[in-house]
Length: 141
Image 1: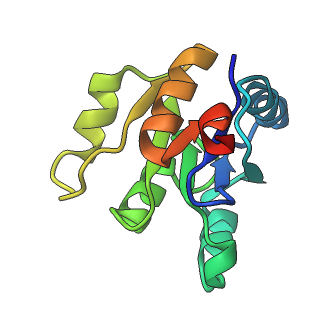
Image 2 (image 1 turned 180 degrees about the vertical axis):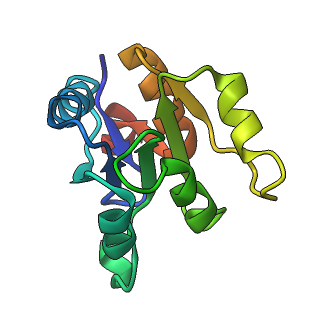
């Protein structure tokens, strides 16, 4: 698989997932897909809010990937917090129809949904669709 590099230089992802094993699996998938990105992790919505607020331009996140079922507040709270400011992918083991129903009436456009368990190919498809990546062979030419 060819390496994908961000068109705009650096690319930062905030992963909001409370399971440390799943955090590591996500990082492994990212590396195996050849994505050249920086991944920070948070285990809940409160820490994610801190990480998302008041960051200098060169440290802002380009993408937030969040689980829905988190300790304390729901990952859906993060969806309404970010709205359209930061591209998001929401992941959960709940059915997509249930996810869409939970957001109905909030006025928020539902971010792409990644159903657990998911394939690395599906994750790559969503990240590259939202992220503006190009094949490293193209960028070297």
